[in-house]
Image 1 (tube, rainbow over the protein chains, first blue to last red):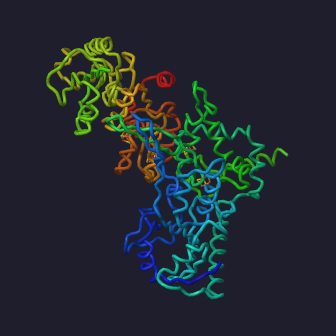
Image 2: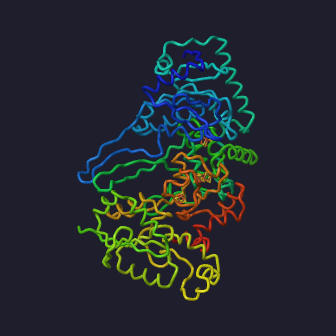
Image 3: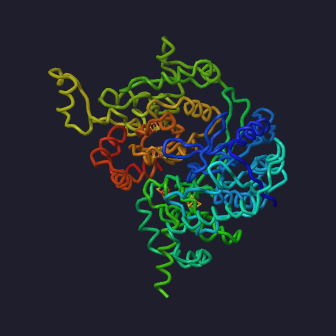
Length: 348
Length: 255
Ligand code: SF4
Ligand code: SF4
Ligand code: SF4
Ligand code: SF4
């Protein structure tokens, strides 16, 4: 699709216009961290953030979400689907890849109506990263670039100019709300291309995956009985941080709640995670993964193998959030993949 | 169905949990409309001895307490421990780390020998309990949830995962990551990570999560730059009773 040029000084008026119809979330600095928060007039936008602390999924699949209302007297119930139009501005490619993956997973079997409703009302505006998080390894996970999944994609090509690639009709409409903007010249597009190459090169210099990622599923298949699971999980607190912070983890639990008069109630869902102790418990007290090491292994198997078998792509986009947030510093897919690869290659 | 009669009793504690319930204000009227409250010091003066559900606040620290609690257990169809002192022994367990002579003379000075007192225990260590509402103080929403579950004939099961879960769901930036000593990773959730959301850290007031990996937590805390002693001091504040127990006993008690 087409590419245009937008100048920094045009942004505030674009944002004001968008805010008339959408909730607008932009990257903001908070202490040493970055969050995606609602835009207020005059607010500074952090274009050079390294990673948004919380996973973007929370905007499409919130940690608590009501699914239906019911009446305890009449047993009547009605679905609740509440989704507001929103723009997520400044999303890095690896996070867009994670959303693309959620889009597929949430449609498998039967469509998840609540997710779909939010997704349909969400505009994604991508942003070329200018910095790489210390723990990130997305450039090794086919997540440094996305061809779809955004309405607009922004690349900062200078102190006050952006090349904006159009990804959808709606994206183009939003870009032109204040009148048409200039088409990017060949030279400007070339600068954007070089910016991309530069950041990928930088990303490839750190946290290196030592083998082609296409071999990860094979390596994982051979590693089910590796001692690494027991060794590493000795320090695991079963806290689930690595699940909740992950942009591609999508498990949830469903619970009911009634009001104080015991007349009406609601059914809601809330995030669940495979690292939690009773995640795989079922009626009768049986638990499929009672041991910590079984749960620890399962998470890596999901990321490196099971999701691949399901969708043909890996379940990890290399954002590095789990590495950062694990209190025990044992949640590290890159380290595990490399270690197992060496282990498996040595055995041959 | 006649309304279940409810009574509140306190032992060694500060009655802060009854205060939390009184803080429900108008909502208390809705909840109370399903119950008959026969004994509640924070809002009522007259008391009765005929009740179905007993809420117990405070820990058991004296032989007299033990007798009184056993009597309540006999009368009540349901007995629910409420608040950290009652569910996990709470702060009162600090004295379990001192010799008896040491703590009695610390508190009562020359009158020490006139007071009967022994090592602090939670309610469940003395009589069987039908439910527990953790926290110091309890979370009033959780109290409401427990009462509603009772009324609907369901058993309320408190979360068996750590505070980190609710902390992540709340979208907080991890305190441990920012260099503060937080016990959320070994503490039972259910408070919606309220202290962390308010800018503080978790002190462990809801007690250890079932299966809490205390060895790992000690190692993790050490790697985050705190000394063994700092970790141990923090543990003792609320986890004292369990530090004094064999890990597996607790495992069996809670699962
Ligand atoms: S597994 Fe870790 S690095 Fe991979 S996508 Fe999830 S949070 Fe990011
Ligand atoms: S974040 Fe670390 S300690 Fe917590 S469940 Fe995951 S691997 Fe275990
Ligand atoms: S701040 Fe505390 S409770 Fe929250 S994630 Fe960090 S360790 Fe867990
Ligand atoms: S965050 Fe920790 S200290 Fe605070 S209420 Fe919850 S369990 Fe208690």
